[in-house]
Image (cartoon, rainbow, N blue to C red):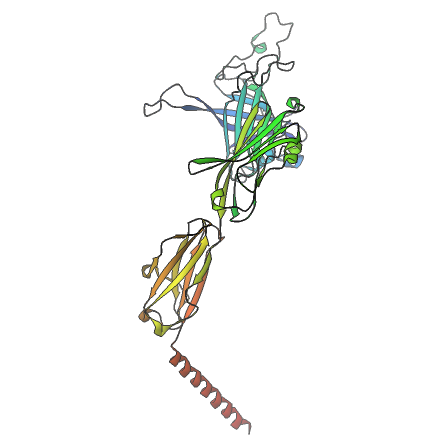
Length: 452
C-alpha cells in the first residue's frame, strides 16, 4: 500500500489508499513519575515526547492534499523512541478530517497518551485474535478552537510470528524488544494497537442566552466486535463550577431504550434514549437556562467495561439594556448629573465610557475624569445592573454638544452607544424662532416686489 507524507506544524498525514489516510500526531506520554521535580519535591507525573499514528482513517477522497511526498519508515528503529500505531478504520473517528486543515487554519492539536487501567478482571485480551494479554492506553486529542475532541481507548495487538523456516532467526526476524513502554515492538520500532472505544464532543465550549435552551454535545463509538447483545450503557452528566460539583442527569440502558433508568437532578435536563441506542448520541439538553447553569459539564460514558469522558464548557449571558436618565438636556440646567443605566446583564464584565462631541468638531473627547460608577445591583435571576454618572458643568458644554455613553459587554458583538444633544435655553430657542420667521417674511416680500 502506497503511503505518502504531508507535513504540517503539528501533524503529518499520509495517504493510504482510496478514501483512507494515516494521521501522525506529536503527543506527550504521561506517566507516574518516580523522581523529584526541580524544587526537590516528588513529581506526580512525567511527560515524554511520543508519536501517535492513526492508521487507515476514513476520510473522503477530496480531503486528501494534492501534493504529497513519500513516507519512509525509520530504517534503524530506536527503542527509546515512543511510537504508537493505532488502526482507526472502525470505529471511525468523527470529524477527523479537520486534522488535515489544522495547519492551514493555524490550529494546534493537543495530544496526550497514558496507560488505561481496567477494574480487576475486566476487559481481558485473551481471544483468538489476541492470544497474548492485551494492554490498554488512552489517547486524548483536542483541536484548538473546537471542532474535534475525542478520547480514544487503544488495545495492543499481537505481533506476527517469525517465519517457521527460520530455525535460527536473524536480526530482521526478531521483534525489537520491549523499549520504553516495556511492551514488544514491531520491526519498525512501533507499538501496534487498535482503537476499540471512544467518547467525543464536537463542541468544547459554547455560549447560550439566559432563559434559553442549549444542547451539550457528547457521543461514543465502539468496535463492532466488542458489541454485545443486551450490553449495559450508562451516561453520567456532572456540572463543575468554582470548585463545586453536582450531578445533573444519569441514564442507564440495558439492551434497548425500553429498559432504561434515568435520574434527573436538574429540572429541564434530558437525554434521548433512542438516539443513545441507535447512534451513540449522549448529548444533554438543558432548558430555561439560569445563571447557576454556567460551568464545565463532564460527560462520562460507560459501555460494558469501557469508560471515557469529555468536558463541555457552558457560558450563560444576558444582553444589557442601556438607557439615559434624561431624554433631553438644556444648557441652563447645568450643573447637572446625567446617568447611563446598564440593566439586567450577565456576566459582570461591563465597561461604561462617556464621550463628548462639540458642535464644531467631529472628534470625540473622553470624559473619564468627570464620571463615577455605582455599585453592582444583583437581581433575583442572577443578572446585575450598573449605572455610570456624568457630572456636567455649564462652562464646558455649550448648546449643540453631543454626549455619548458607550457600553461594552461580552454578550454584545460590539459596543453600543446611546446619546443626546445639549439644547439651548427656551428663551434662546424662542428668539431664534422669531428671527427665523422674520427673515422668511422679509424674503417673501422681497421676491413679491420683484415679480410685480
